[in-house]
Length: 151
Image 1 (cartoon, rainbow, N blue to C red):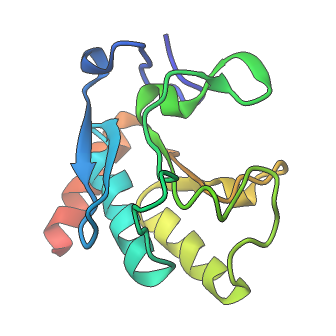
Image 2: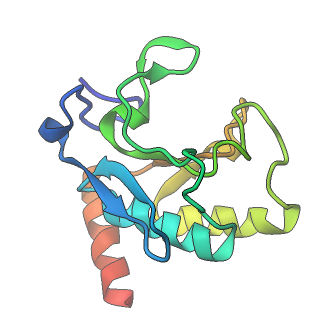
């Protein structure tokens, strides 16, 4: 089975390589697919540093969860493949618009692009908490190598 973005999805986290990864600069661990972890977790670390803190005291930072897209039966969410994360979900609820300071939106978009992600805040049905892998596996591998070379 594949999630909405074409990545392998499974109820069995081990089958698709889902693990918990520590977000640098926080005590927070987010579960995602190992292949995309450098992108999702790297993004989350920069989000924490540049956009707003991920405090971890509220359980509102999510990764892997096997389920359909909300309101779309039969389409597996990208959370089902471990290729999507939600950050500070209680502050940026599904359907709410303008939950980030306007001055932060260009940085959110720039960080998403840097890490090969799509931001739910740019969708018709706004999901400002949501960030997902928007590139295929070959491009993920190349982007991870590029970002590691920049460190």
